[in-house]
Amino acid sequence: QVQLVESGGGVVQPGGSLRLSCAASGFTFSSYGMHWVRQAPGKGLEWVAFIRYDGSNKYYADSVKGRFTISRDNSKNTLYLQMNSLRAEDTAVYYCAKDRIRVRIDGFDYWGQGTLVTVSS
Amino acid sequence: DIQLTQSPSFLSASVGDRVTITCRASQGISSYLAWYQQKPGKAPKLLIYAASTLQSGVPSRFSGSGSGTEFTLTISSLQPEDFATYYCQQLNSYLPEFTFGPGTKVDIK
Image 1 (cartoon, rainbow over the protein chains, first blue to last red):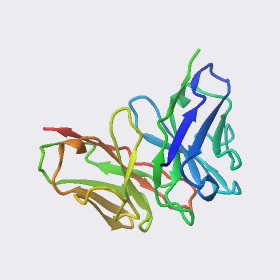
Image 2: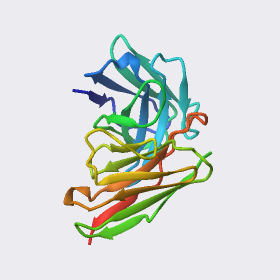
Image 3: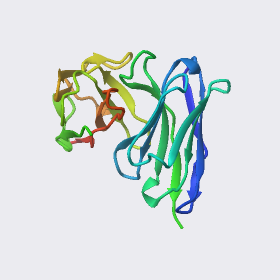
Image 4: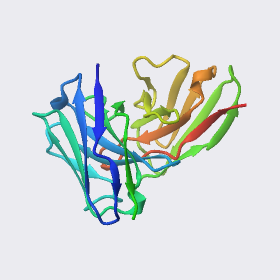
């Protein structure tokens, strides 16, 4: 069965960096686009970043552009999110999510359990 | 940027009720809309994609409709396991941002 397992969350000071990982299994990882979505405590969902199945296209939310970098290693079935210059407002549970189909983006059909990032001094 | 609004933001209903949630987009997004259900402490679950197509395994009491700027999610007969927060999401990849609506919390009356 499809599994997405995030790791790498924790407490970091403002201005610091953190790298999240998402280990994928149960499907052909190299065939699907992947996303990061976050949710601040008690708040709604915010889409963060997308990477195409082959890594050739990447999109970011304006709120993280220039600070976060999405990447993937298809040989390791792993998705990453490098987060630099972290701010208090980046505090959230970060989910990785899989595109439902390869040919277009029309929904995220599998999600990980999330990893909590807390930015605080 | 495309903005999504949802109404109502909070809904109190009873088991067996018919429930409708509306999602409006600030500009036309054709049928590039999905609906998710999220329960406390859990990841979201995809219910509907392409505005009206039921995701595999989702009960048929859930349905979606609409196109352009106005969309609805309907639960025909609310069940105890349906009490949750519901989010719409626009997926127009011509504008590479995949915004979520603010959510509608469905609570027990």
